[in-house]
Length: 296
Image (tube, rainbow, N blue to C red; front, side, top):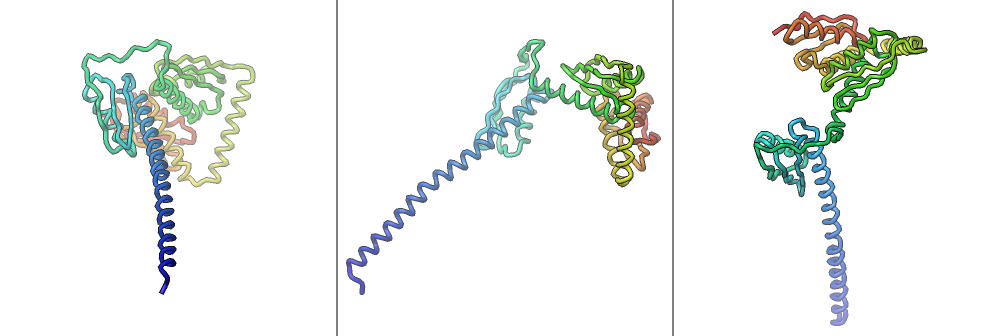
């Protein structure tokens, strides 16, 4: 049998181990809680920025000064709008953000509310996003069009007004570039400053066009027809969607061996012809069949 002294020493050792373990646990828990808290805070700030950015570019809300605060997955909204529909929209946008569990909608509705006036030269974040989107749309249409893809054309958009600079071989190419830009969604005006017949323009454009054709032919030889057809379908659809003079969402597009088949409904014969024209000039398109496009 162990002596009383040995038992005391053993108990003391156990007590020290338990005390050390408790101290370690006590020091670890706050650190874990701190890490979790930091992660939650970063997530809340990211969600808050996402909601605010969406408000800033939404056409129904961008003129309003709305406040957003996110804490532990709950979004608190503030500010003033002129209708209940705008208030509900702001709430639905917040609820649609991943990680938002609840929305405390404190936005006030005032039918007489007037958004704050801005300096005519002031460009908001929303304005810059819209202009950048227009520029990208115009550039894409010029790039996909077989008559303009080899031209050296620069696009700049400010307040919806597009300025075209660069060079073209002739007036027909210049006018086509202007029409493609003018009929792009979001464009309010076009300043066509493209130079015609500038020194070296024809040779440069011809060389670029020939190079592009060679690349396309080489790619076609190495790529299955289905992939090429898929590319054509995507570009035709995008061109129609970017264009303001056709109902891009109402027109279906299918491509088989370079032959594009359009379907759906349009408002007029002119709109159908415009859709055919846009599709015909997409690089790689051999023929357009619009027999399945009906006029309402």
